[in-house]
Length: 270
Image (cartoon, rainbow, N blue to C red):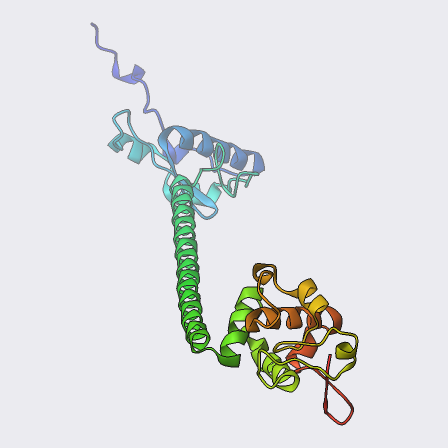
């Protein structure tokens, strides 16, 4: 192949010294656009309002010729314009970058918090169930102790035992016992076979009888159904008839108060 004469050899690709100065808005826009385009291919290092092009060869390494021929970084910095921010974010090229790692971390943290909340809720529920179970056991123990107490009273007999048994049969609170005992003592003195032969009922031939001094018709109408087969003088049956009659006619407050009384506080029969 023949040698090309020296005068006709191609001149170097670039003559930096002969290049005209970069001036004017249109020229600066050209540089900026060129910078953005080259940045997409070879990478742009952006800092604030400036972008520096790092030219590379095809194998990814900078060449000596490129370094010597390229426009200096100072010249680019002096003449380049900032990339205009778009709707994706300031200085972005080709769309916004998705913060993938941040999203993943946020999701994982949210899952962790949700799991912790579920654990706390489960512990709270378990605590409430434990408290309820403990209260149920305590209530059962109290009821068992009360049954033993009443069994003991009933076993001993007497007015207190009869009242306790009658209230149990009627499913009424044992707190009524003091009021009922006051009525019994005022009506019969605690004698289950007491008979009133002097009041108006006696004159009509229906004397009051038993602890609560009920007449036969009242006894039959108000005695507790479980004790309907017992006689009027049966202490427990008589108490159920008298108490149920008083609650029906005068209300339970009268039983609690221990019967009716006059303005002077004296007992009045029912």
